[in-house]
Image (cartoon, rainbow, N blue to C red; front, side):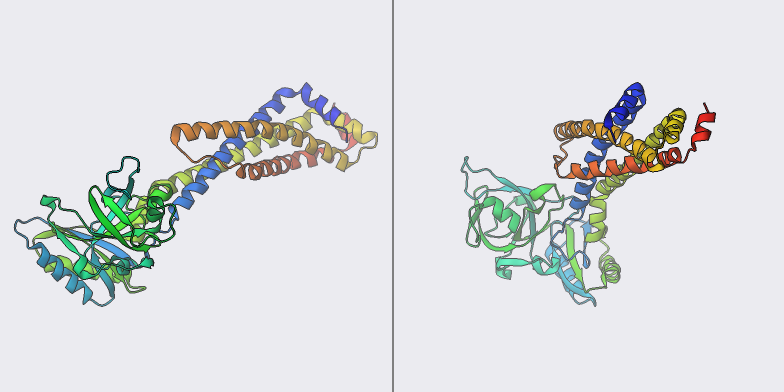
Length: 404
């Protein structure tokens, strides 16, 4: 089939063709960027924390009366929870992964060296075995011993731990040229901390984008404040039961404090990524509606062209054109219009992504995602035009002639 007659026909009715091409271009630009944002948001929200999320929860209390014996309260609570059926491990902690609230401090591998950039890190501390309680994977070194735990008074701000356990992401950030990290020194201001262990992964409470989400450290500290927070790991399959029983037991144990939260890590994940999932579903809805509108536009324009060309179709049929010739004509015509729109849409997609990167700090669109959009729009155009093209191919020559 010659392309020139099809192109001549399109040029005589170029307004409709340009509208469809513009619609295809806009669809490709939006679909490409939206699909990648959806993929990125869903991937971010599915990142592992390093924690046994199916079985871990955290519960927090605030003591509102003066003169609370904080060490005695902590010891009593820990002993009571450890004795409860279904509790596998329990530890005090200043914060929990994905809880969106906690400590963030800057550390560096060399003290007071202006040439060495400091790294912001999630600063976990506990007086118990946080690796055991959270179900973390210790990949190098060891965890703290009880005699290494320091007790700190917040009013004195005497945070100067001597040992530290790093996440692997933080260790690689601080010591990019090393493969082993135990024995290295990390500085918090002028305070020197020796790396005694490395864990595979521990996500921060804020779960930032990129590697920053896994730059965490654990130090052996017990902070004496009226706010008591415990991380608890239940036996497999007993999380809900243990959460209820621990809450009831701790509430009944004292009348000088109130519970401020009791939440599983899975619940914290759902809350942390609620906006990301909402954005993903909103974009999926917009993408579906856009595809529907584009397909409807192609069907409408193809149907209009068929109605306008009934005489030409009849003449071609009368001089020997077969049904598949007519069908092929309209499909090729639609393919040409769609291809022109796709060519424009590729440039528009890259321009739109460049604006999104600079204005909204979204990830840069990988070029590999665009071919999938191109193929999808070619298929959409052909499928949308198939119905009108098939109706055109079924027009009898005599009927087409009488309709003039």
